[in-house]
Amino acid sequence: MAKVESKNKQNPKLVQSELQDGRASLALEYYLGRNETPVLDESGNHVLYTEGAMKGKPKYKIKHIRKREALNLYIRLHPRNRQERTQNKNTLALAEKIRFECEQEFLEDRVGYRLKKDGENNFIRYFRKHCENELYSKPVRCNYKTSCIRFVKFLEATPRFQRYTSFLRMELITPEMVTGFTDYLKTVAKGEGAHKSYYMFRTVILHAIEEGLMKKNPCKGIVIHRDLNTLKKEILTIDEIKRLAATHYKGEDTALQRAFLFCCFTGIRWCDAVCLTYANVDFSARMLRFNQQKTEGRSAHSGVTIPLSAALLKLIGEPAQPSEKIFNITCYRTTAITRLQKWVKTAGISKTITWHCARHSFAVNVLGAGANIKTVASLMGHSSIKMTEKYLHVIDQQKQDAINSLGDLDYDCEAVSV
Image (cartoon, rainbow, N blue to C red; front, side):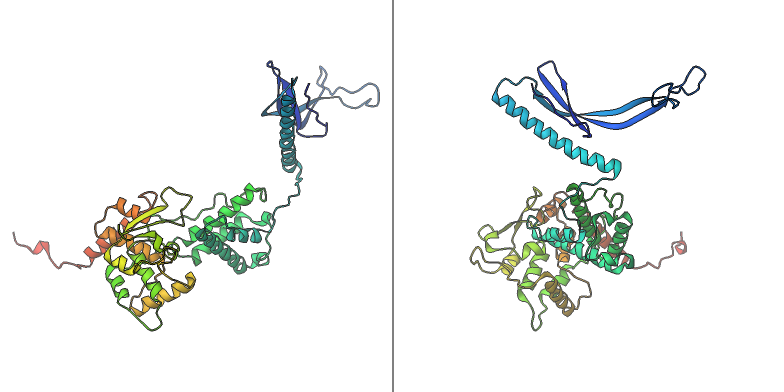
């Protein structure tokens, strides 16, 4: 007969209840303390002990408080063969493991006891590990890195947090610190940058909680509100893009310029443009096919197919080896943005242009030309048209600006004779 052996000092204890089908149900029994109720006589006076070591002391009725929690695990009371005995052994081992983990949580909650963990306790180092995790795609790692850099700079810029720039214990991250970080992000980030950096920071916090490194979520209830219908990035008009294409200067980066123009007419991101190879191009069908790095493996809409016009085929150039990159960009993204902005300035365009502006410009320009919103959403690889609708607000604003540009009409209705 299988029995549960449990020591009296264990809390919770592993207990079993016999069932009619020859099995026993396993459960955890917690001891939550006791209630002492004074024993009173008919007159309401406290009854005292009259003999023994307790003579003269008041009597109390003691009620022990216990709570039972079913594990949904079962063992055979009378195992008939080796297989059933082995199954009982494995089930009891699992139940004991659960009991031990629950015991540590129970002790921590009730008396402040904390089971020593071998995990990371330095949040700064833990955050940087996410920046280097090869399981994430390169764009995701870049987002983690940007968020981490901004968090450290926030600590450096805040006098009372400056001592935590290299070592910050998990339990020292408070809602006050998180609120300060969100306020800091709103001042240093542009466009969706503040929301994205906070999202990555909050994701790291949630991972730490899941791994048992943090007990409470300091981000709970703290959000960065954003207007999804507002496009904060600059937009290049078709005329400005054509002006860029016609602008050349000494020491220009032709590969980078070709790639940027290609993005303006296809809406693809920097991370996808720099990775495009001739294997992604079907010259006979005049099609470009690739998977978006940002959503690959996480979305059913990561695959994108874009028809290629004569202008786009000219930017791609003649067919080459399938593994050869279409745009041989050798500089890092920060250097690419510097060179891009120099090109924009040389063209006489007074806008703050980043690489992602090409994607926004594509959406606004094709929608403004009358393209269907579902078609644009498909070309951009959006999972739903809700992500594309924000560009419609830019079109509406442009229409309003066009009407307003006509100026006032100096016409006095009252002066018209009847």
